[in-house]
Amino acid sequence: GASLLLASGTARAAEVLEVTVPFPFLVNNHTFPAGHYRIEEDSLAGPSVLLIRGMHTPQATFVLTQTASGRGPNKPALQFERYENQYRLSNVWESPIAGQSVVRP
Image 1: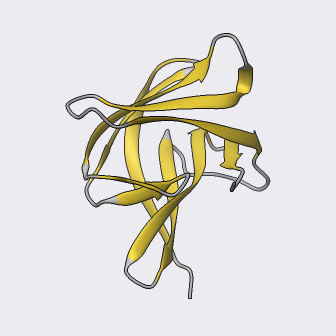
Image 2: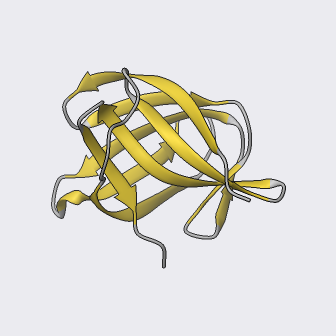
């Protein structure tokens, strides 16, 4: 079954989010370790492409997104889905009404 976990962060600007994720997670079939991450819009591709980059690790990837439906948490956060013993990034929320859903490859 899928469940929902959130990693809280702070928004530094409208297009930048810094978060701490306390567990390893998957993005585009790549494993990212627990740690601090910076998520930002790709300045050339626009808001539908996000760059996720480790702040203290070499992990980085671009993620294709679409506008999320529903409401998000009351503060900036990443949202994950759990599949067995792995967590997969599903949404990036800047605010309760502004979020992006990760498009799976």
